[in-house]
Image 1 (tube, rainbow, N blue to C red):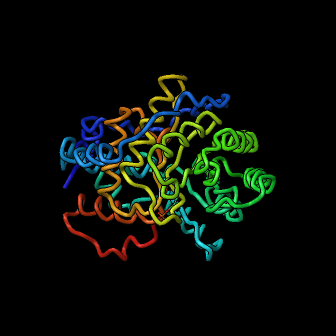
Image 2: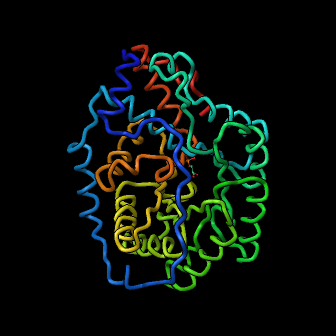
Length: 339
Ligand SMILES: O=C[C@H](O)COP(=O)(O)O
């Protein structure tokens, strides 16, 4: 069991940022396409896989600090429902969970009852944005909407742009766009850049996350190049997957995107966020991705203004693990079923 003092010490010792509301994150401005930033950059898949395989061993998170890392993961979750049978009632339940992601006895056990533990955002389809905005009123939790013909994106550009504008008018503060995979696979970088830049303009003040659908981009070199193009076109975040591809977030793909993000930052001075998404269901994944972020980019990126998990069901396991941390017992998974 832990105590209030233990967890606060743990947050510091684990070097995750203290619980706080982040300042308004800065925007990434659009720049012209610059293929020199990625052409000829090849990514060795075996080397990326080896690097990821060694991370867990090199940076295991001490048991005492695991709770701190898991609470930080909650702050970074885009709590998501993207199902064809979504309803207003389901979205309202999800938003209630977003407001209080941990049961009261867990918050008490961790000493975090008054610390405002909330998720990073709630992510829904455009027609659910209004319901989410109403349910989150006063919470400060932003609503993210997928748009641009999610998940495939195979719609005329003017309709994709109109969908963005519609979701923003409904109250979405963040827009998760999907890129045209065909433009990436045919290496038509100028057209891809111009489409994403138009999407960024349609977003207006809403922050834009660019979903690369990496499971469909064939090579890690394509992932690196598409990451660069999305950032040059003004993406505030780059995101791995829709959750609907055959292969979604993986550590080697994430490593490739983080290297692109780091290179982009070194050249331009702009800090871009990263969102792995799709298929992440377990607390141990929440730890693994945070270790990757910290190893590659430093602790500044363990903040919801620069890092999000896109996940519909990971919160349930995190809550279960934190329940165990506090009580010493595992609750039935049905007790934390909602998220
Ligand atoms: O963007 C978020 C993903 O769609 C969520 O995927 P998931 O349902 O596999 O967690």
